[in-house]
Length: 162
Image (cartoon, rainbow, N blue to C red; front, side, top):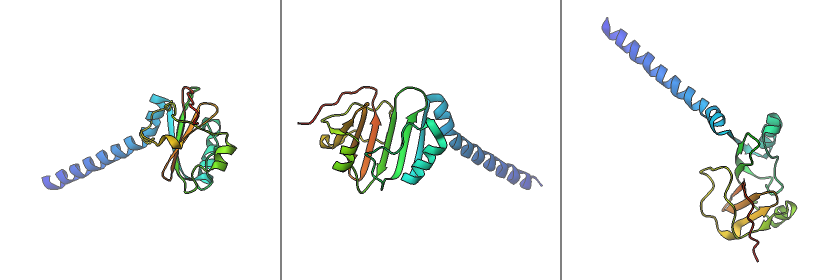
């Protein structure tokens, strides 16, 4: 009779630990937002990105930037939920940063970029200096392969390329 009690106790323990783990994982985003005042969202493509932006209202800091190609996929955006400046975005795009998209958004080539106001681990530490661009308003963008990165810096330090 002791054997079924022990097995039941072990089974309940495993279920409780699994439930706690799932609960902790799902609350991680909420906890991060409360502690850091930062929120991260992902979208599969531009329509999903715009749908989220419309649903989240003014909290989302930007609509589709003019330099963001319409074929953007695997979009990841992290932003500050307070009045402090800061957002980082990454997405994959076969089109990338074309001269037309850069011209439309008034992006100018720069030799280096100021660091992002928000720190994320998915913006590479090294990007070829030929791939940095700056738009007004402290915004920087860069491309590495088929991935485009954009961020808002706390300080504007554009160094125009000659």
